[in-house]
Image 1 (cartoon, rainbow, N blue to C red):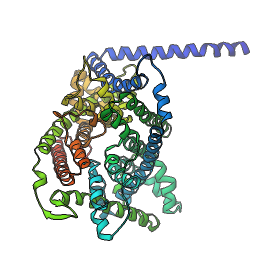
Image 2: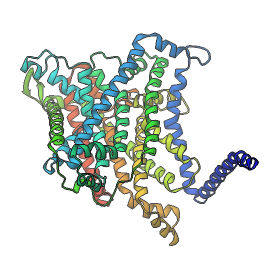
Image 3: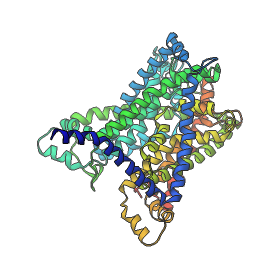
Image 4: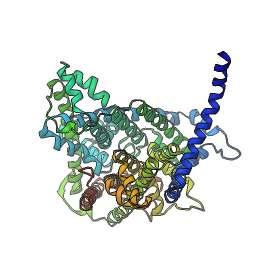
Length: 571
Protein backbone atom coordinates (compact mmCIF):
# COMPACT_ATOMS: atom_id res chain seq x y z
CA UNK A 1 0.00 0.00 0.00
CA UNK A 2 2.79 2.38 0.88
CA UNK A 3 4.64 1.62 -2.36
CA UNK A 4 1.48 2.29 -4.35
CA UNK A 5 0.97 5.59 -2.55
CA UNK A 6 4.57 6.57 -3.23
CA UNK A 7 4.16 5.77 -6.91
CA UNK A 8 1.03 7.91 -7.21
CA UNK A 9 2.66 10.83 -5.40
CA UNK A 10 5.72 10.59 -7.61
CA UNK A 11 3.80 10.54 -10.88
CA UNK A 12 1.28 13.22 -9.96
CA UNK A 13 3.48 16.20 -10.99
CA UNK A 14 4.20 14.56 -14.36
CA UNK A 15 0.50 13.89 -14.85
CA UNK A 16 -0.28 17.49 -13.99
CA UNK A 17 2.34 18.75 -16.44
CA UNK A 18 0.99 16.47 -19.19
CA UNK A 19 -2.52 17.73 -18.44
CA UNK A 20 -1.42 21.34 -18.74
CA UNK A 21 0.42 20.63 -21.99
CA UNK A 22 -2.63 18.83 -23.34
CA UNK A 23 -4.77 21.81 -22.38
CA UNK A 24 -2.42 24.20 -24.16
CA UNK A 25 -2.43 21.94 -27.20
CA UNK A 26 -6.23 21.88 -27.25
CA UNK A 27 -6.33 25.68 -26.96
CA UNK A 28 -3.82 26.02 -29.79
CA UNK A 29 -5.86 23.71 -32.04
CA UNK A 30 -9.07 25.58 -31.19
CA UNK A 31 -7.41 28.92 -31.94
CA UNK A 32 -6.10 27.60 -35.25
CA UNK A 33 -9.67 26.97 -36.37
CA UNK A 34 -10.23 30.75 -36.32
CA UNK A 35 -7.13 32.03 -38.15
CA UNK A 36 -8.53 35.55 -38.56
CA UNK A 37 -9.08 36.06 -34.84
CA UNK A 38 -5.82 34.30 -34.03
CA UNK A 39 -3.98 36.78 -36.27
CA UNK A 40 -5.82 39.74 -34.75
CA UNK A 41 -5.10 38.44 -31.25
CA UNK A 42 -1.39 38.13 -32.04
CA UNK A 43 -1.39 41.64 -33.55
CA UNK A 44 -3.13 43.20 -30.53
CA UNK A 45 -0.84 41.36 -28.14
CA UNK A 46 2.16 42.69 -30.05
CA UNK A 47 0.80 46.23 -29.92
CA UNK A 48 0.20 45.93 -26.16
CA UNK A 49 3.78 44.71 -25.72
CA UNK A 50 5.16 47.63 -27.74
CA UNK A 51 2.97 50.46 -26.44
CA UNK A 52 2.36 49.36 -22.84
CA UNK A 53 5.00 46.90 -21.68
CA UNK A 54 7.97 48.39 -23.58
CA UNK A 55 7.64 51.92 -22.07
CA UNK A 56 7.35 50.51 -18.55
CA UNK A 57 10.34 48.24 -19.13
CA UNK A 58 12.33 51.14 -20.58
CA UNK A 59 11.78 53.15 -17.39
CA UNK A 60 13.00 50.21 -15.29
CA UNK A 61 16.10 49.72 -17.48
CA UNK A 62 16.92 53.43 -17.44
CA UNK A 63 16.71 53.46 -13.64
CA UNK A 64 19.47 50.82 -13.52
CA UNK A 65 21.77 52.65 -15.92
CA UNK A 66 24.61 54.63 -14.32
CA UNK A 67 26.24 57.65 -15.84
CA UNK A 68 28.68 55.27 -17.48
CA UNK A 69 29.36 51.53 -17.37
CA UNK A 70 27.19 48.46 -16.77
CA UNK A 71 23.89 48.22 -14.93
CA UNK A 72 24.13 49.08 -11.26
CA UNK A 73 22.07 49.96 -8.18
CA UNK A 74 23.88 53.26 -7.68
CA UNK A 75 20.88 55.31 -8.78
CA UNK A 76 18.73 53.69 -6.08
CA UNK A 77 21.47 54.20 -3.51
CA UNK A 78 21.51 57.87 -4.50
CA UNK A 79 17.73 57.96 -4.07
CA UNK A 80 17.93 56.82 -0.45
CA UNK A 81 20.98 58.96 0.29
CA UNK A 82 19.10 62.18 -0.48
CA UNK A 83 16.44 63.19 1.99
CA UNK A 84 14.47 65.11 -0.65
CA UNK A 85 13.97 61.95 -2.73
CA UNK A 86 12.81 59.53 -0.04
CA UNK A 87 10.76 62.32 1.56
CA UNK A 88 8.91 62.53 -1.78
CA UNK A 89 8.20 58.78 -1.54
CA UNK A 90 6.82 59.08 1.99
CA UNK A 91 4.71 62.12 1.12
CA UNK A 92 3.31 60.41 -1.98
CA UNK A 93 2.31 57.28 -0.08
CA UNK A 94 0.65 59.32 2.68
CA UNK A 95 -1.18 61.59 0.22
CA UNK A 96 -2.40 58.79 -2.07
CA UNK A 97 -3.52 56.64 0.89
CA UNK A 98 -5.38 59.55 2.51
CA UNK A 99 -7.02 60.45 -0.82
CA UNK A 100 -7.95 56.81 -1.40
CA UNK A 101 -9.70 56.56 1.97
CA UNK A 102 -11.48 59.92 1.69
CA UNK A 103 -12.57 59.50 -1.94
CA UNK A 104 -13.72 55.89 -1.51
CA UNK A 105 -15.70 56.77 1.63
CA UNK A 106 -17.28 59.80 -0.03
CA UNK A 107 -18.01 57.81 -3.18
CA UNK A 108 -19.75 55.10 -1.14
CA UNK A 109 -21.86 57.68 0.68
CA UNK A 110 -22.96 59.33 -2.56
CA UNK A 111 -23.59 55.98 -4.28
CA UNK A 112 -25.59 54.70 -1.29
CA UNK A 113 -27.79 57.79 -1.27
CA UNK A 114 -28.30 57.56 -5.04
CA UNK A 115 -29.47 53.93 -4.79
CA UNK A 116 -31.12 53.74 -1.36
CA UNK A 117 -31.67 57.34 -0.29
CA UNK A 118 -34.72 59.59 -0.81
CA UNK A 119 -35.87 59.37 -4.42
CA UNK A 120 -36.15 63.11 -4.79
CA UNK A 121 -32.40 63.49 -4.15
CA UNK A 122 -31.10 60.65 -6.33
CA UNK A 123 -31.04 62.55 -9.60
CA UNK A 124 -29.40 65.74 -8.26
CA UNK A 125 -26.82 63.79 -6.25
CA UNK A 126 -25.91 61.65 -9.28
CA UNK A 127 -25.46 64.79 -11.38
CA UNK A 128 -23.26 66.43 -8.73
CA UNK A 129 -21.17 63.29 -8.25
CA UNK A 130 -20.44 62.98 -11.97
CA UNK A 131 -20.00 66.70 -12.64
CA UNK A 132 -16.22 66.77 -11.95
CA UNK A 133 -15.78 64.21 -14.76
CA UNK A 134 -16.01 66.93 -17.42
CA UNK A 135 -13.39 69.27 -15.95
CA UNK A 136 -9.60 68.97 -15.80
CA UNK A 137 -8.75 68.11 -12.17
CA UNK A 138 -6.37 71.03 -11.60
CA UNK A 139 -9.07 73.50 -12.67
CA UNK A 140 -10.45 72.98 -9.17
CA UNK A 141 -7.08 74.03 -7.77
CA UNK A 142 -7.40 77.30 -9.69
CA UNK A 143 -10.92 77.77 -8.32
CA UNK A 144 -9.79 76.98 -4.78
CA UNK A 145 -7.02 79.59 -5.00
CA UNK A 146 -9.56 82.18 -6.17
CA UNK A 147 -11.80 81.26 -3.23
CA UNK A 148 -9.36 80.63 -0.41
CA UNK A 149 -5.95 81.86 -1.50
CA UNK A 150 -4.05 84.61 0.29
CA UNK A 151 -6.11 87.18 -1.65
CA UNK A 152 -9.05 84.86 -2.19
CA UNK A 153 -12.66 85.95 -2.19
CA UNK A 154 -13.68 84.01 0.92
CA UNK A 155 -10.40 84.76 2.69
CA UNK A 156 -10.88 88.51 2.34
CA UNK A 157 -14.62 88.41 2.98
CA UNK A 158 -14.30 86.56 6.30
CA UNK A 159 -10.88 87.92 7.26
CA UNK A 160 -9.40 84.44 7.54
CA UNK A 161 -5.72 83.76 8.02
CA UNK A 162 -5.80 80.09 6.96
CA UNK A 163 -3.65 78.80 4.11
CA UNK A 164 -5.19 76.32 1.66
CA UNK A 165 -1.80 75.57 0.13
CA UNK A 166 -0.18 72.23 0.91
CA UNK A 167 -1.90 69.14 2.28
CA UNK A 168 -5.40 70.60 2.94
CA UNK A 169 -5.78 72.06 -0.54
CA UNK A 170 -4.38 69.03 -2.40
CA UNK A 171 -6.54 66.59 -0.43
CA UNK A 172 -9.69 68.65 -0.97
CA UNK A 173 -9.08 68.99 -4.69
CA UNK A 174 -8.28 65.30 -5.11
CA UNK A 175 -11.49 64.30 -3.33
CA UNK A 176 -13.50 66.44 -5.75
CA UNK A 177 -11.50 65.38 -8.82
CA UNK A 178 -11.56 61.61 -8.29
CA UNK A 179 -15.04 61.31 -6.78
CA UNK A 180 -16.73 60.32 -10.10
CA UNK A 181 -14.49 57.25 -10.50
CA UNK A 182 -15.32 55.92 -7.02
CA UNK A 183 -18.99 56.82 -7.39
CA UNK A 184 -19.43 55.01 -10.71
CA UNK A 185 -17.74 51.79 -9.60
CA UNK A 186 -19.49 51.58 -6.24
CA UNK A 187 -22.89 52.68 -7.57
CA UNK A 188 -22.67 50.01 -10.29
CA UNK A 189 -22.29 47.34 -7.60
CA UNK A 190 -24.93 48.73 -5.23
CA UNK A 191 -27.53 49.05 -7.97
CA UNK A 192 -26.98 45.38 -8.93
CA UNK A 193 -27.27 43.88 -5.44
CA UNK A 194 -30.24 41.61 -4.79
CA UNK A 195 -32.51 43.69 -2.50
CA UNK A 196 -33.96 40.50 -1.01
CA UNK A 197 -30.72 39.99 0.94
CA UNK A 198 -31.17 43.25 2.80
CA UNK A 199 -34.93 42.59 3.10
CA UNK A 200 -34.21 39.21 4.67
CA UNK A 201 -31.92 40.80 7.25
CA UNK A 202 -34.61 43.39 7.95
CA UNK A 203 -37.26 40.69 8.40
CA UNK A 204 -34.99 38.96 10.92
CA UNK A 205 -34.99 42.12 13.04
CA UNK A 206 -31.56 43.54 12.14
CA UNK A 207 -31.31 47.30 12.59
CA UNK A 208 -30.58 49.37 9.42
CA UNK A 209 -27.09 50.29 10.56
CA UNK A 210 -26.29 46.61 11.17
CA UNK A 211 -27.63 45.70 7.71
CA UNK A 212 -25.36 48.35 6.25
CA UNK A 213 -22.33 47.03 8.16
CA UNK A 214 -22.87 43.28 7.77
CA UNK A 215 -24.72 42.94 4.44
CA UNK A 216 -24.46 45.95 2.14
CA UNK A 217 -20.82 46.89 2.65
CA UNK A 218 -19.47 43.30 2.37
CA UNK A 219 -21.46 42.70 -0.82
CA UNK A 220 -20.24 46.00 -2.28
CA UNK A 221 -16.63 45.08 -1.45
CA UNK A 222 -15.54 44.23 -5.05
CA UNK A 223 -16.59 47.60 -6.45
CA UNK A 224 -15.26 49.43 -3.41
CA UNK A 225 -11.90 47.70 -3.65
CA UNK A 226 -11.61 48.45 -7.35
CA UNK A 227 -12.52 52.10 -6.71
CA UNK A 228 -9.87 52.33 -3.98
CA UNK A 229 -7.22 50.90 -6.30
CA UNK A 230 -7.97 53.32 -9.14
CA UNK A 231 -8.11 56.31 -6.82
CA UNK A 232 -4.75 55.36 -5.29
CA UNK A 233 -3.16 55.16 -8.77
CA UNK A 234 -4.69 58.47 -9.86
CA UNK A 235 -3.69 60.20 -6.63
CA UNK A 236 -0.08 59.01 -6.60
CA UNK A 237 0.34 60.04 -10.26
CA UNK A 238 -1.34 63.44 -9.87
CA UNK A 239 1.09 66.31 -10.25
CA UNK A 240 -1.09 69.06 -11.73
CA UNK A 241 -2.87 69.80 -8.45
CA UNK A 242 0.28 69.61 -6.26
CA UNK A 243 2.13 71.90 -8.69
CA UNK A 244 -0.58 74.56 -8.45
CA UNK A 245 -1.73 74.31 -4.85
CA UNK A 246 0.84 72.04 -3.21
CA UNK A 247 2.85 74.88 -1.73
CA UNK A 248 6.16 73.25 -2.59
CA UNK A 249 5.25 69.72 -1.46
CA UNK A 250 7.83 67.13 -2.45
CA UNK A 251 6.09 64.29 -4.28
CA UNK A 252 7.29 61.54 -6.61
CA UNK A 253 5.18 62.63 -9.58
CA UNK A 254 6.08 66.33 -9.43
CA UNK A 255 9.75 65.64 -8.73
CA UNK A 256 9.97 63.09 -11.56
CA UNK A 257 8.48 65.64 -13.95
CA UNK A 258 10.88 68.36 -12.79
CA UNK A 259 13.87 66.02 -13.12
CA UNK A 260 12.87 64.87 -16.61
CA UNK A 261 11.67 68.13 -18.15
CA UNK A 262 13.49 70.74 -16.10
CA UNK A 263 16.87 69.19 -15.25
CA UNK A 264 16.99 66.59 -18.06
CA UNK A 265 18.01 64.02 -15.44
CA UNK A 266 16.22 61.02 -16.91
CA UNK A 267 18.09 58.53 -14.72
CA UNK A 268 16.73 59.83 -11.42
CA UNK A 269 13.34 60.59 -12.99
CA UNK A 270 13.18 56.89 -13.90
CA UNK A 271 14.12 55.87 -10.35
CA UNK A 272 11.32 57.99 -8.92
CA UNK A 273 8.95 56.48 -11.49
CA UNK A 274 9.90 52.97 -10.39
CA UNK A 275 8.79 53.87 -6.87
CA UNK A 276 5.51 55.05 -8.37
CA UNK A 277 5.04 51.67 -10.03
CA UNK A 278 5.84 49.40 -7.07
CA UNK A 279 2.92 50.30 -4.74
CA UNK A 280 0.48 50.54 -7.65
CA UNK A 281 1.38 47.08 -9.01
CA UNK A 282 1.33 45.62 -5.50
CA UNK A 283 -2.21 46.89 -4.90
CA UNK A 284 -3.23 45.76 -8.40
CA UNK A 285 -2.13 42.16 -7.77
CA UNK A 286 -3.69 42.09 -4.30
CA UNK A 287 -6.89 43.54 -5.72
CA UNK A 288 -7.22 40.87 -8.41
CA UNK A 289 -6.44 38.10 -5.92
CA UNK A 290 -8.98 39.35 -3.37
CA UNK A 291 -11.71 39.79 -5.98
CA UNK A 292 -11.07 36.30 -7.28
CA UNK A 293 -11.34 34.88 -3.77
CA UNK A 294 -14.42 36.91 -2.78
CA UNK A 295 -16.53 36.77 -5.93
CA UNK A 296 -20.22 36.89 -5.05
CA UNK A 297 -23.18 36.67 -7.43
CA UNK A 298 -26.01 38.92 -6.30
CA UNK A 299 -27.53 40.17 -9.56
CA UNK A 300 -31.20 39.43 -10.14
CA UNK A 301 -33.95 40.91 -12.21
CA UNK A 302 -34.85 43.46 -9.52
CA UNK A 303 -32.45 46.35 -9.10
CA UNK A 304 -31.95 47.87 -5.69
CA UNK A 305 -32.46 51.37 -7.01
CA UNK A 306 -36.00 50.49 -8.07
CA UNK A 307 -37.06 49.45 -4.56
CA UNK A 308 -38.61 51.75 -1.94
CA UNK A 309 -36.50 51.17 1.12
CA UNK A 310 -36.86 52.30 4.71
CA UNK A 311 -34.11 54.78 5.56
CA UNK A 312 -32.87 55.01 9.12
CA UNK A 313 -32.12 58.52 10.42
CA UNK A 314 -28.97 57.10 12.04
CA UNK A 315 -27.64 56.34 8.55
CA UNK A 316 -29.43 58.98 6.52
CA UNK A 317 -28.58 62.11 8.51
CA UNK A 318 -24.76 61.68 8.59
CA UNK A 319 -24.71 60.67 4.93
CA UNK A 320 -26.85 63.62 3.90
CA UNK A 321 -24.54 65.93 5.87
CA UNK A 322 -21.52 64.57 3.97
CA UNK A 323 -23.36 64.82 0.65
CA UNK A 324 -24.43 68.40 1.39
CA UNK A 325 -20.87 69.52 2.14
CA UNK A 326 -19.43 67.72 -0.91
CA UNK A 327 -22.18 69.03 -3.17
CA UNK A 328 -21.74 72.62 -2.03
CA UNK A 329 -17.96 72.42 -2.52
CA UNK A 330 -18.32 70.99 -6.05
CA UNK A 331 -20.93 73.57 -7.08
CA UNK A 332 -18.89 76.39 -5.53
CA UNK A 333 -15.74 75.37 -7.39
CA UNK A 334 -17.58 75.10 -10.71
CA UNK A 335 -19.27 78.43 -10.04
CA UNK A 336 -15.93 80.12 -9.41
CA UNK A 337 -14.50 78.68 -12.65
CA UNK A 338 -17.40 80.10 -14.67
CA UNK A 339 -17.49 83.46 -12.85
CA UNK A 340 -13.71 83.80 -13.06
CA UNK A 341 -13.85 83.29 -16.82
CA UNK A 342 -16.10 86.35 -17.24
CA UNK A 343 -14.48 88.60 -14.60
CA UNK A 344 -11.39 90.76 -15.04
CA UNK A 345 -9.90 89.61 -11.72
CA UNK A 346 -12.41 87.98 -9.41
CA UNK A 347 -12.21 89.40 -5.91
CA UNK A 348 -10.05 92.32 -7.11
CA UNK A 349 -11.68 93.86 -10.21
CA UNK A 350 -15.13 92.31 -10.43
CA UNK A 351 -16.01 93.75 -13.84
CA UNK A 352 -17.57 91.70 -16.63
CA UNK A 353 -15.26 90.94 -19.56
CA UNK A 354 -14.90 88.56 -22.50
CA UNK A 355 -11.22 89.29 -22.95
CA UNK A 356 -10.16 85.98 -21.37
CA UNK A 357 -11.86 84.08 -24.21
CA UNK A 358 -9.89 85.89 -26.93
CA UNK A 359 -7.05 83.39 -26.94
CA UNK A 360 -5.70 82.10 -30.24
CA UNK A 361 -3.65 79.44 -28.50
CA UNK A 362 -6.58 78.35 -26.35
CA UNK A 363 -8.82 77.64 -29.37
CA UNK A 364 -5.98 75.97 -31.25
CA UNK A 365 -5.13 73.68 -28.35
CA UNK A 366 -8.80 72.85 -27.78
CA UNK A 367 -9.09 71.64 -31.38
CA UNK A 368 -5.90 69.60 -30.97
CA UNK A 369 -7.34 68.06 -27.79
CA UNK A 370 -10.55 67.05 -29.58
CA UNK A 371 -8.62 65.35 -32.39
CA UNK A 372 -6.32 63.55 -29.97
CA UNK A 373 -9.06 62.45 -27.55
CA UNK A 374 -11.42 61.22 -30.28
CA UNK A 375 -8.65 59.26 -32.01
CA UNK A 376 -7.52 57.75 -28.70
CA UNK A 377 -11.11 56.92 -27.83
CA UNK A 378 -11.65 55.02 -31.07
CA UNK A 379 -8.36 53.18 -30.59
CA UNK A 380 -9.25 52.20 -27.02
CA UNK A 381 -12.85 51.21 -27.82
CA UNK A 382 -12.12 49.15 -30.95
CA UNK A 383 -8.99 47.51 -29.55
CA UNK A 384 -10.59 46.86 -26.16
CA UNK A 385 -13.77 45.28 -27.53
CA UNK A 386 -11.95 43.05 -30.04
CA UNK A 387 -9.43 41.96 -27.41
CA UNK A 388 -12.25 41.29 -24.93
CA UNK A 389 -13.99 39.03 -27.47
CA UNK A 390 -10.82 37.09 -28.23
CA UNK A 391 -9.97 36.63 -24.55
CA UNK A 392 -13.51 35.72 -23.50
CA UNK A 393 -14.67 33.59 -26.43
CA UNK A 394 -11.56 32.26 -28.20
CA UNK A 395 -9.46 29.69 -26.39
CA UNK A 396 -6.09 31.15 -27.24
CA UNK A 397 -3.03 30.05 -25.24
CA UNK A 398 -1.85 32.45 -22.56
CA UNK A 399 -5.13 34.34 -22.19
CA UNK A 400 -4.41 35.21 -18.56
CA UNK A 401 -1.00 36.66 -19.40
CA UNK A 402 -2.38 38.74 -22.28
CA UNK A 403 -5.15 40.13 -20.07
CA UNK A 404 -2.66 40.99 -17.32
CA UNK A 405 -0.34 42.78 -19.77
CA UNK A 406 -3.24 44.76 -21.24
CA UNK A 407 -4.37 45.83 -17.76
CA UNK A 408 -0.91 47.20 -16.97
CA UNK A 409 -1.82 50.43 -18.74
CA UNK A 410 -4.57 51.04 -16.19
CA UNK A 411 -2.61 49.84 -13.17
CA UNK A 412 0.53 51.93 -13.75
CA UNK A 413 0.51 55.68 -12.92
CA UNK A 414 0.28 57.94 -15.96
CA UNK A 415 3.53 59.66 -15.00
CA UNK A 416 5.39 56.38 -15.56
CA UNK A 417 3.83 55.75 -18.97
CA UNK A 418 4.50 59.34 -20.01
CA UNK A 419 8.18 59.10 -19.11
CA UNK A 420 8.33 55.63 -20.65
CA UNK A 421 7.01 56.91 -23.98
CA UNK A 422 9.51 59.76 -23.88
CA UNK A 423 12.37 57.30 -23.39
CA UNK A 424 11.18 54.48 -25.68
CA UNK A 425 10.00 56.46 -28.70
CA UNK A 426 12.53 59.24 -28.90
CA UNK A 427 14.85 57.53 -31.40
CA UNK A 428 14.36 55.40 -34.53
CA UNK A 429 12.82 53.07 -35.51
CA UNK A 430 9.83 54.61 -33.66
CA UNK A 431 10.77 58.26 -33.31
CA UNK A 432 7.37 59.65 -32.29
CA UNK A 433 8.20 62.41 -29.81
CA UNK A 434 6.86 65.81 -30.79
CA UNK A 435 3.94 64.33 -32.77
CA UNK A 436 0.24 64.06 -32.08
CA UNK A 437 0.43 60.31 -32.73
CA UNK A 438 2.47 59.60 -29.61
CA UNK A 439 -0.21 61.24 -27.45
CA UNK A 440 -2.95 59.26 -29.23
CA UNK A 441 -1.11 55.98 -28.63
CA UNK A 442 -0.33 56.85 -25.02
CA UNK A 443 -3.92 57.76 -24.16
CA UNK A 444 -5.46 54.98 -26.27
CA UNK A 445 -3.47 52.12 -24.76
CA UNK A 446 -3.77 53.58 -21.27
CA UNK A 447 -7.59 53.58 -21.55
CA UNK A 448 -7.88 50.34 -23.57
CA UNK A 449 -8.27 48.22 -20.38
CA UNK A 450 -11.46 50.09 -19.45
CA UNK A 451 -13.10 49.19 -22.77
CA UNK A 452 -11.74 45.64 -22.53
CA UNK A 453 -13.17 45.14 -19.04
CA UNK A 454 -16.54 46.58 -20.12
CA UNK A 455 -16.59 44.26 -23.13
CA UNK A 456 -15.71 41.17 -21.08
CA UNK A 457 -18.44 42.00 -18.56
CA UNK A 458 -21.07 42.28 -21.32
CA UNK A 459 -19.86 39.08 -23.01
CA UNK A 460 -20.29 37.15 -19.76
CA UNK A 461 -23.95 38.23 -19.82
CA UNK A 462 -24.39 37.24 -23.49
CA UNK A 463 -25.53 33.65 -24.03
CA UNK A 464 -23.02 31.83 -26.23
CA UNK A 465 -25.96 29.96 -27.79
CA UNK A 466 -26.59 33.02 -29.99
CA UNK A 467 -23.16 32.65 -31.57
CA UNK A 468 -23.58 28.89 -31.89
CA UNK A 469 -26.90 29.41 -33.67
CA UNK A 470 -25.24 31.83 -36.07
CA UNK A 471 -22.50 29.30 -36.79
CA UNK A 472 -25.11 26.56 -37.38
CA UNK A 473 -26.71 28.82 -40.00
CA UNK A 474 -23.40 28.95 -41.87
CA UNK A 475 -22.20 32.39 -40.78
CA UNK A 476 -18.42 32.55 -40.32
CA UNK A 477 -16.65 33.68 -37.14
CA UNK A 478 -16.08 37.21 -38.43
CA UNK A 479 -19.67 37.54 -39.62
CA UNK A 480 -20.96 36.26 -36.28
CA UNK A 481 -18.84 38.80 -34.46
CA UNK A 482 -20.06 41.70 -36.60
CA UNK A 483 -23.73 40.70 -36.91
CA UNK A 484 -24.45 39.04 -33.56
CA UNK A 485 -21.86 40.02 -30.97
CA UNK A 486 -21.34 43.72 -31.76
CA UNK A 487 -25.07 44.64 -31.74
CA UNK A 488 -25.41 43.00 -28.30
CA UNK A 489 -22.32 44.53 -26.67
CA UNK A 490 -22.46 47.91 -28.41
CA UNK A 491 -23.06 49.63 -25.08
CA UNK A 492 -19.62 48.48 -23.91
CA UNK A 493 -18.08 49.93 -27.09
CA UNK A 494 -19.76 53.29 -26.58
CA UNK A 495 -18.92 53.30 -22.88
CA UNK A 496 -15.25 52.68 -23.71
CA UNK A 497 -15.28 55.38 -26.40
CA UNK A 498 -16.94 57.99 -24.18
CA UNK A 499 -14.73 57.23 -21.17
CA UNK A 500 -11.52 57.33 -23.20
CA UNK A 501 -12.61 60.56 -24.92
CA UNK A 502 -13.43 62.30 -21.65
CA UNK A 503 -10.19 61.13 -20.07
CA UNK A 504 -8.19 62.19 -23.11
CA UNK A 505 -9.66 65.70 -23.04
CA UNK A 506 -8.62 66.35 -19.43
CA UNK A 507 -5.54 64.11 -19.05
CA UNK A 508 -2.31 65.63 -17.76
CA UNK A 509 0.01 63.24 -15.91
CA UNK A 510 1.14 61.16 -18.91
CA UNK A 511 0.73 63.75 -21.65
CA UNK A 512 2.79 66.44 -19.88
CA UNK A 513 5.98 64.63 -20.90
CA UNK A 514 4.93 64.37 -24.56
CA UNK A 515 3.57 67.77 -25.58
CA UNK A 516 5.60 70.05 -27.80
CA UNK A 517 5.15 73.60 -29.14
CA UNK A 518 3.62 72.16 -32.31
CA UNK A 519 1.38 69.66 -30.49
CA UNK A 520 0.07 71.09 -27.24
CA UNK A 521 -3.24 70.31 -25.54
CA UNK A 522 -5.81 72.47 -23.78
CA UNK A 523 -5.37 70.69 -20.45
CA UNK A 524 -1.61 71.34 -20.43
CA UNK A 525 -2.19 74.95 -21.54
CA UNK A 526 -4.53 75.52 -18.57
CA UNK A 527 -1.84 74.16 -16.24
CA UNK A 528 0.74 76.50 -17.78
CA UNK A 529 -1.59 79.50 -17.41
CA UNK A 530 -2.25 78.65 -13.77
CA UNK A 531 1.48 78.35 -13.04
CA UNK A 532 2.05 81.80 -14.57
CA UNK A 533 -0.80 83.33 -12.55
CA UNK A 534 -3.17 83.98 -15.48
CA UNK A 535 -6.16 82.63 -13.56
CA UNK A 536 -8.82 84.43 -15.59
CA UNK A 537 -7.61 83.05 -18.90
CA UNK A 538 -7.14 79.66 -17.28
CA UNK A 539 -10.78 79.72 -16.14
CA UNK A 540 -11.90 80.74 -19.64
CA UNK A 541 -10.10 77.87 -21.36
CA UNK A 542 -11.43 75.54 -18.64
CA UNK A 543 -14.99 76.68 -19.35
CA UNK A 544 -14.54 76.06 -23.08
CA UNK A 545 -13.03 72.65 -22.36
CA UNK A 546 -15.88 71.71 -20.01
CA UNK A 547 -18.53 72.78 -22.53
CA UNK A 548 -16.82 70.94 -25.39
CA UNK A 549 -16.53 67.72 -23.37
CA UNK A 550 -20.17 67.99 -22.29
CA UNK A 551 -21.41 68.64 -25.84
CA UNK A 552 -19.30 65.84 -27.31
CA UNK A 553 -20.45 63.34 -24.70
CA UNK A 554 -24.09 64.26 -25.28
CA UNK A 555 -23.47 63.89 -29.03
CA UNK A 556 -21.88 60.47 -28.60
CA UNK A 557 -24.80 59.31 -26.47
CA UNK A 558 -27.22 60.59 -29.12
CA UNK A 559 -25.33 58.61 -31.76
CA UNK A 560 -25.44 55.58 -29.47
CA UNK A 561 -29.22 55.77 -29.20
CA UNK A 562 -29.66 56.38 -32.95
CA UNK A 563 -27.55 53.34 -33.79
CA UNK A 564 -29.15 51.15 -31.14
CA UNK A 565 -26.12 51.12 -28.84
CA UNK A 566 -27.98 52.68 -25.93
CA UNK A 567 -25.62 52.68 -22.96
CA UNK A 568 -28.38 54.05 -20.74
CA UNK A 569 -30.60 51.03 -21.31
CA UNK A 570 -27.70 48.61 -21.35
CA UNK A 571 -27.98 47.54 -25.03
